[in-house]
Length: 365
Ligand code: FNR
Image (tube, rainbow, N blue to C red; front, side, top):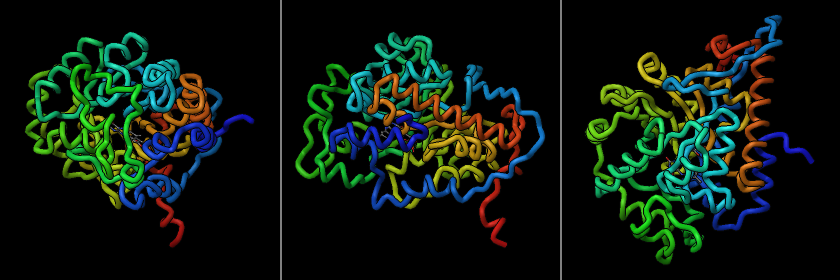
């Protein structure tokens, strides 16, 4: 049977992944309230379509930092993609390239920066960064990203430590022994292949390596060592958005890390308006979290995001059928977005206005 929506890919992935991996990809933090809210909040927004506006030809392309995207959707960084399918990060990035989407590689990838660049040379690639206690580790990653032609650095700022993901602790989650954190050959990935009893291996690794003392001043440090644009990922408040601007970031991603860090934070789409209001004219505001259909992409753009990213949907495509599975998932999502654009009466992204999306409470009066 044809797969017609992201949920169909998720169902296929559920049938294919081992419990350890499935739970890792699927989980949110705590009791997973925000995980559901990331979807629910989109449903609370209503579309106001305009009619009779000639939508025979659509142009949904856009430019981010001067790079041409065929449509306003990219792939968010998710760790350890070879656990989903042997095609791993290269398969995911090639699919993104074919779809004209940006691909963000996680620091915690199972493919190295260099292998990813060689495997997906035609894809626009950004590199997601964590700041390590040992700054030379981070600095080396920056140099390698520059050399391998990555176009931006995405500094994840919502993970000084990792959130409490109950399933991973219950499963004593660890990376299967045939895989490794490929950016760190020679550096022992403590805990990831060898979780202590009762703990999640990934959390063990993070708390031993990532620097929880980092502050906004470290952005100044990062800016001082690279010419690449810096995007901060994990902003949920206008206050932090203003700081991102003050510290010279080129862009930010409104994100709650797929609801994996702290539970009961707002859905990304709920946090977006205050952030756009505070800094939307001054830096590139983007969003991830809960995007599963064309309507969701449209709503995020109408509320001021310049592009959106998907994390889990790409993992489901990958688990289902490797690179081909991600290609298929992206094609389904793209067609759905084009349908939304046409039925709302928008020929191009410039036609999208904030009046086309309102909160459901407007209709309850
Ligand atoms: C993530 N995310 C993430 N973010 C990041 O900055 N570095 C990382 O290594 C990871 N790893 C990761 C693994 C898995 C399994 C998931 C689900 C998520 C967060 C990710 O970039 C993004 O913010 C969310 O996935 C977006 O939400 P959706 O699209 O999954 O709903």
